[in-house]
Length: 193
Length: 242
Image (cartoon, rainbow over all chains, first blue to last red; front, side, top):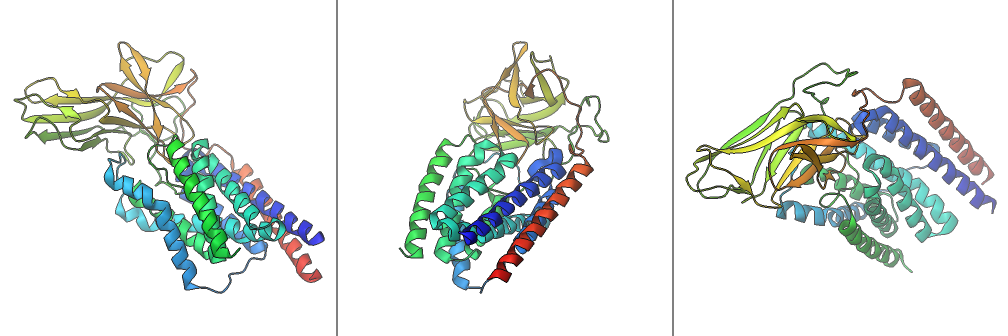
C-alpha cells in the first residue's frame, strides 16, 4: 500500500508539474499561442526537468522499438496524407529555410511529452493500476494538455491518438516507439498542412 | 495476455476511435495532432486600432492574371504577401465560370476600409475585397462549393467568424479554423467584401506583446522547480527505503 501511495504521489507531482509547465508555455506564448517556438522550447525543458527529477533513465536501446514507432507514425498520418494528395488543401506552403529550426522545436516538444507521459507517468500508473489504466489515463492527460492550444475541437482526436501511442508503448514495452511515432507524425505536418 | 496481443487490441480500439473522431471532428480536414505552426509576423492593419504597439506596416494586396484557354479556370490560389498571408482565395478547378470571348481573368485581393460596421460584433483586423474580373468586362460567376476565402485573425486567442458584406450588412458564414493557426476559412458562392467578426462591441487594443507578465512566468517557473525538487526527494526516499 505504501509503495502504491508513493507511486501515486509521484504521479500527482508529475501531473502538477505538467500543468505548471503548460501554464508557463501559455503565459510566455501570449497571443502567439502554439506558434511560439520559445514557449514550446521552455515547455519541453520543463518536462525534461520533471522526467529527470522523477528518476527516469533511458533503458537499453532496441532497433525494433524504432521500427514499431515508424509503423505507428505511418498509421497516424495515413489518412491525412491520402486526403492531402487527393483533395485541395487550402493552406500556403511554408518556406523551406525555416524547416531545420521548426523541426528542432517540434522534436523537442514531442519527445519531452512522450518521455513524461508514456515514459514516467505510464510506468507509475501501470505499476499502480495496470496497463489499461495507464493507457487511458495518459491518453486523457495527453488530450487535455492540448486543449488550451488547439481548443476542445481537438479533444476527441487527441484522446484517440493518445490511446494509439499507448498501444505502441505496450507492444514495444518501451517509450521509444511512441516517441518515434509522435515525432514523425508531428514532423509530417510540414508536408500535410 | 501477451504485450503484443494487448497492444494490438489497444491499437485496434484506437484506430476505431480515431476514425470516429475524424468523422465527428469540427476541425477542417483530417486534423493533425500536435505540432507548432511557424511564427506569424505581426498583423498589418489598414486602420490600426488604438493601443496597437507594433510598428506600422501597410497590409499588402495580392493579384493573379491568367490566360484562359477554356471556359473554366484550373485550380488557382491568390494570397496577400504577409507571412502568413492575411487573406487568401482558393478556387478549385472549374470554380470560376468564364463566358466565351474572355481571354484573360484577373483575381485580386486588397484590404479596404470596412463598408460598414457590423451590429453587435467587431471586425477583427482588416476587411478585404475579393474580385475576379475579365479582360472584356464580362461577368464571372462561381460554382457553388468550389471556392473558399481564408482570413488571418489578429491573434491566436480569438475565434472569429468569416463574414461577407451582402446587401448593406455583414452575413456570417460557416467558418473553419486550421489547427494550430489563426487562419479561418469559409466556402463562398460569390466574391465581394469579407472580414472576420468577433462577438461583442468592445474591441481590445491589439498588440502581440505577451498577455501575461514576467512575474507570473517567473512564479510559474519557481513552482515547476519546487515540484521537481519534491519529486527528486520522493524518488530518493523511495530508493533509500528499497
